[in-house]
Length: 451
Ligand SMILES: [Fe+2]
Image 1 (tube, rainbow, N blue to C red):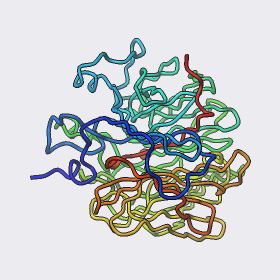
Image 2: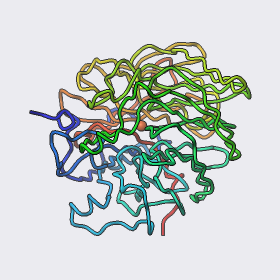
Image 3: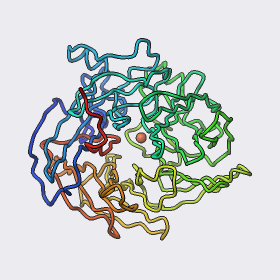
């Protein structure tokens, strides 16, 4: 009996390594000075081999530092949660005095805020990492974050604020938090979702914040039965999307939508009377415990919410199977034209991303592909603008690609700006990088100098 969470490129690696001066095929753009970081599950010592779910694995961050056209290093480091500290017989990192959130694993996203690097998974507090990927401490931004935060915060590029939410299986089921540009929690509002739903992500526009109240609901039976996946699909739950002003504590206006699940929106914007949300729509989620989202084809959709009537119009923008959508982060909350995603159409039999990067031009209504070739599995591609003044789409896409045949991984840099993305550099990594979730490019200029 095998567990697919532990097979193929889902299988964890067993050690931390550091390797320097990596071989490069092509030319790394000289403007790229910083590090690409991505986190994912990488369990040590699995307590129940057959019940283990991929998403529950301990967090490990993989990173590649680039400088002056060179690939300076590759490193991988476990996020030092209390459990990892115990297993590795090291001192636990400092934590806020009385956190009520779960310890967490840092296995879902890694990002920068206020000059610091954080790894986080939902229901828990972020772990601060130093630029060499060592865990520094657990962070609550001055608190309180009673249920931690999700792994998909959003940034207001004008104010520098970080907006985030936290869901929980006990009331209040959802909270909305704002952390200011200096890394201090300045606002919290309880949000009246109808039940203990899983809220993996959300969106902001320049004026509104939007929450998803969708039918993946905490299941006490699953929790009592010791299942690692404790949120399941509930046919009877009324699916809704809700919006409220970002600038006050006004209540949420809820609007019913067709049943579906949303892990990842691409972006959202509004024009005063309508809120437009582009997202990857799953027909359902967690009807059964499986590795990877395999309950129908995840497709790119658009919701247009009429903020006066509460009516939501739903349209499919691209029927191809896809996930891990990303846009130019400078446009968070503003109208976007382009989006980038990874194919997820069943072409690979292990449930992870496929061999294509999809570039959507939502103005033209076209999608063009970059093909990594047979046996390749792409992961999330982050967009990096060429410079601060570059227009949308003028930059690169960056992410890990796994080659099943050679059992190796690479960091790939694509030029995003052509009609289809094209490779400009492929950095050979010294070891296989297991499948993971999310990451970001963190330029040197974003990091606060540390004493
Ligand atoms: Fe996610």
